[in-house]
Image (tube, rainbow, N blue to C red; front, side, top):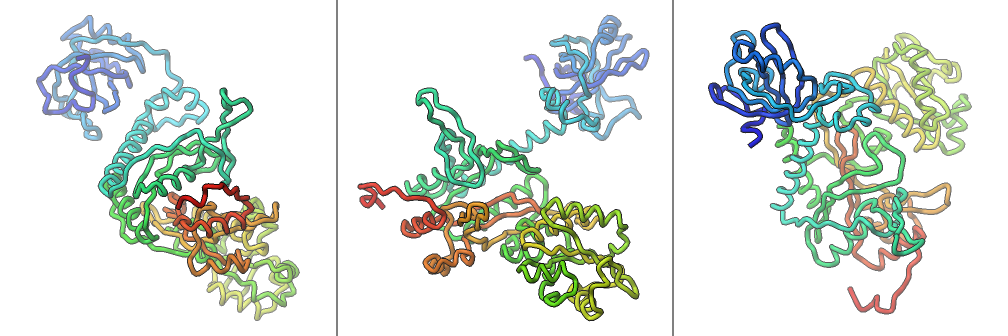
Amino acid sequence: MLRTHTCGEINEKLVGKDVTIAGWVHSRRDHGELMFVDLRDAYGIVQVVFDPKVNRDLHTKAHELKSEYVISIKGKVRPRPKGTENKKIPTGMVEVLADEVTVLNKSLVPPFEMDDSVSVSEEVRLKYRYLDLRKPLMQKNLRLRHKVVKIIRDFLSDEKFIEIETPILTKSTPEGARDYLVPSRTNIDKFYALPQSPQLFKQILMVAGLDRYYQIARCFRDEDLRADRQPEFTQLDMEMSFVEENDIFSICEELMAKLFKEIAGISLKTPFPRMSHRETMSHFGTDKPDLRIKSLELKNVTCLFANSEFKVFKNAVDEKKEIIGFNAEACADFSRKDIDELTERAKTQGASGLAYFKIEKDKVASPIAKFFKPEEINKLKDAMKANAGDLLLFVADRKQIAYDALADLRMEIARRRGLIEKDVFKLLWVVDFPLFKYNEDEKRWESEHHPFTACRIQDIPLLKEGKFESILARSYDLVINGTEIGSGSIRIHSRELQEEIFRVIGIKLKMHKRDSDFS
C-alpha cells in the first residue's frame, strides 16, 4: 500500500510503530538542526521531523520540500518532546520521525495559503477552485453535505419512502421562474427544458400508486441570484399519498430534529410553532420571519390618520394605501445620518420615503411633528407602546411596499443593535397562504405557489363566486431563522377542481377522446 495510515490517524497508540503516510506539505519550518513539515491529507494534519543526527542526507533533501508538494513519508511515530505538544489537534501529542521521503508531485508557489484564517477574494478562490477545495472549511462542508444526505436517506427509508430519480430533460412548465432550455440535435428547432422542480413527475408517480417517494433533486431556474439560492441547486423532494398537513408536518419535524441532533448535537422542540401567512405579514412584513428578534413588530396605524393634516398620511388614506410602522425601542439616539441611511434603504424597497418620530422625555422630535395635533401624537404613542428613548418609523404606501421596506429595516436595526439571539434556531411553519395573486402587469390572476396546490375545502365555493383574493391554499413553508428552507402543499386530486384552477389562471385545456376512460 502507498500508505498504512492517514495523517489524522497518527496518535499515541502508534508510538514506536513504523508508518507510511502521504499528503500535501502544509508548511515547513527550519529550526536549524531540526526540520519540521506539517503533512496534511483529507483526514487531518501531522508533524513530521527530519533529524540530521539520524539521516543527514534526508535532512538535506527536506530543504527541497515546498508548500503543497505531494509527498510520501516513511518513519516511526514518537511522542513530541514535553512542552511542544499541540492539544488543539488530535495528532498533536505525537510526531513522525522520517527515515524516507518520496516526492510524488511538485507544486508551483500557490496563490494563497490553504488556511481558513487567510482571507482570499472570491474571484481568486473560484479561479483556483481546486486549491480552494483543499481548505479545511470547504472539505468540512462537503463532508457535512454527505452526512446530511445519508441521514435523510436512512430516515426516509425507515419511514417506507423509496428513492426515485425523475428526468432532467423535460418540457417547460408554467411556474414562477424562467426555464433553462437545451436544444435538441435530433429534433431541429425543438428544445428541452431543465426542470425548475419535479412537479409534473410528482403527479405521474402519485397517480401510478407509488405511496411514498423522495429524491435528492437537481433544480434549474433562470433567475437572478439570491443570497440563499443560485441558478442550479439541490432540494429534497418528498411525496406522500393519502395524507393531510399534520402528517407531513410530523414527518418533516422528525427529520429536522434528527438532522439537528446528529449533525450539531442540538435538540429541537417539536411540534414547531405555526403561524398564518396573514399573521407573519402583519407582524413582520415578511412570510419568512426571523423569530430570534423579540421586538420591532409592525403595527398598522392607518385608522389614526383619516383626518390628518399631514398630507402624506392623509393622501395615503384617501388612496387606500396603508400607514404601517414599528417601534425601534431605545433607538432615539440614532443620528440624522443613521435615519437618512434607513430612508435610503426603504427607498430601495420601493417606498417613497420614511417618516419618523423620536420619543423624548417631554416632547416628540420629528420634522413632521408640527403637522400633528397633541391628541394624535398621544394616540400614536399609545398604539405603538412608545416610551421615552424610542424611535417610531413609518411607511405610507401600498401594503406590500410598506411590508417590504419595513421588513428590511427591522432586520437592519436588529443587526445594528444586536437584537438577534445568537446560537439558537427558531423554526416555524407558515400556513394559510393565499391560493392566487394578482399580476398587475398582465392584469390576470396566477398561482401563489403552483397550479396543482389545493385550496381549503370550505373555500371551493369562492371559486364560482369569483372571490379569488379570499381563497386560502393548503400550502406551507418551513422557516429557520428568517430563511425559507422548505415549501410544499396538498395537491389537487379532483379533475373538476384542477380544471377550475387552470381556467382562473388562464391555462387552456386540451380534451382527448380517451380522457374519460381513465381515473
